Length: 472
Image 1: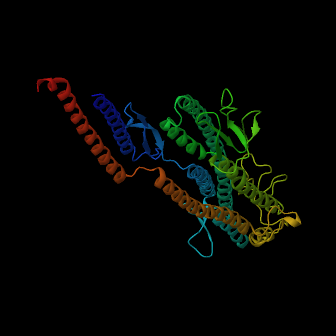
Image 2 (image 1 turned 30 degrees about the vertical axis):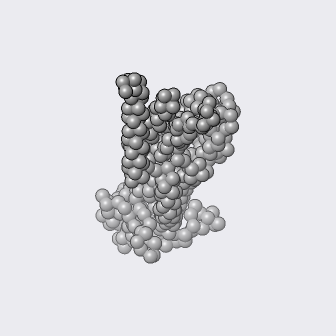
Image 3 (image 1 turned 180 degrees about the vertical axis):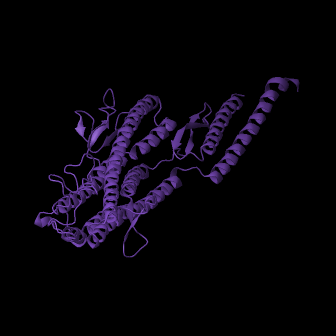
């Protein structure tokens, strides 16, 4: 009879183990569309065996030894790096697109010549086109210097060009401001993630101090937040021995989470103009990827360069036109120096513009000189503000920005493919397969049913021994 009772107890443990396996299979299926979930398995194991008084050996049955999570640490770390690089390129692309839109002109990427075309439609032209029409206004004035209509048209063209240049510079400044605001907002998100990861670290340590490798759901949450953090900055994660599953986290060579310290967060991330700091000290973060550094690089790189080039164009226009004494009012110029606001401001009027300085009726030598400036080649080596003509300088500025955007877009496409391949590789290890889980469900169900039938058989034998044996 003792053997029957032992068999009943062993079978109870088997029922419990198969039941847990069925529960985990259902949990896997429920998370089939959860990208942060890693497939779980119940580890079944034997409790061993014992030697009976008669010398026979009896199994102690099967039991659930714990949960096993399907994770590949190397793939997790590779995906973190890919996520960080993809986010950096996406942020760069977004900033460059905003800068190109602010200029109102773009590089024609569908044209083998790489021509510069206008993106504006409300006035029908961008800066490059308005430069051409502005100098053509001097051509018209030189043909009839005393024509009020030609004078008024020239002033109008000058004001339109001025507005275009000032508006583009203002929009580029707004792009810089927007990028700064984006970084400041993202730093808040980064610090929230760092704090949350540290809290999960602590929870994992407490749970696995009792039962190692048991906090699988908390590990999933931590990994998902680490990957979210990787979008903003390149992070490195390392297991820390003796901390029961906890990890340290560093960014830019600086440790931000250390599970051997209390509190774990050694210092939140701060942003001061163009540099990031964090950790103890704090220390400067040498970030190499992620959207935070990418936004700063575009803001202080291509966008700042575009504003510098635009100012050089405005300064050269001011110096060249003012040198021709086209304003007949003493102390006044064609362009005001310095402008009240922006990069350019027209100071000459139809009442003060002059095409000649000789006083000769019909004289046009100054307007001719002004018209010829359209084709003049300047040189910074000779003390000028720009190299080449006005048009080529601006076209080069737009082309440089357009090529940077084109290269970034191509790199982003390649990097997105790399991230997709890495993610698919990890999913092949950690992802949930519906077919596999359904097969497991059927297998565990059959095992549970077999154990239940065995339990019924033992129960019948016990009933026979206890209740009916004496009646024979």
